[in-house]
Length: 435
Image (tube, rainbow, N blue to C red; front, side):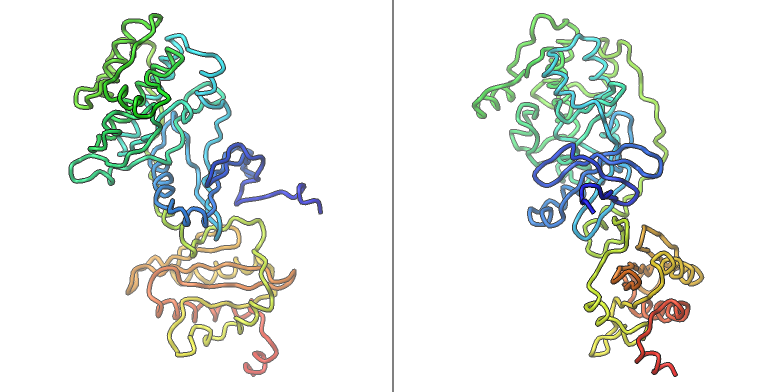
């Protein structure tokens, strides 16, 4: 079959063209096969992430986007992982970057600039209320949807309130030089909210002027201009807008205007519409750590994973409980068995067997995550199962403990084996042993 005609499916999403590409990730256009909704999927290569020590940065990006649900922030719908990839399923924003709008059309009239600035402040204010500081606000990270509304994106350099040190400040220098606050450059610690607000002021200047307030080919000269807030507003900007920009671009963060005061500013308030949205939904952060673990239970293939038959059969002898012991009789944390039943039937049988044993079942294609609702000796026992395709009519099933006590896992498997006797494929040797 022509490979280009094969539908590539990740979970319930059909993958399409590449719409963005960076050093460590690609962004693909995709469509939800259940409801037809277009989405963007950011795909990270786990090996590259670990090699370049980016795990914490990506965990922070995922956590941040899960914490922030706002109409002016790009939404994260779902996070999935395979053994090799991490997938962030996000809102697809079709209108391009605000940066492109400025490049193509130049400076904006004040009413248009004001609308975008109001939406930016709404988003940033909400992020700060959730303990999230973006730290890389610039027109390239501000997207426009089909209705022309602004969406803040790219939280890869964001910080959470937990990262604030004992002095109450952040200490990591990051961001894009032209938009970075002077206190960030000075490397003496900074308030994340005040630093974000400075970047918002630079963005407002760019929207109204059509160029940067601080720019120099020499980086040291650029930093000097930023540190002294050395800029001049062009004459076409109104006095009230100039006044607001000057209050935001105050090099002393203590004296810099705050968002509550901006919301009361006369220039800002004109035609202002507060955002309307539902923020009651709980945020589940349990899967953030999970996507970086080799034991992750998310499955992202349309069919069971193919594996080498000889290798897997050599690792399995039906549901013989001896599989749960090492040669030295220590308890193992995983085992495998073979089955000639269809993959869907195997999954259903395991699900039917686990529920009466007190397990909550989470299903994802050909993987199951089983969680014992009753805490054991080492917390709740969690068991992961996956069906691998060995041949068209033969599957290998892996059962492994991901959390909890190994002895309790052994007892669980013993009970499971009783319920799955008719599912397991047995060799002639095993059939003879049963007689």
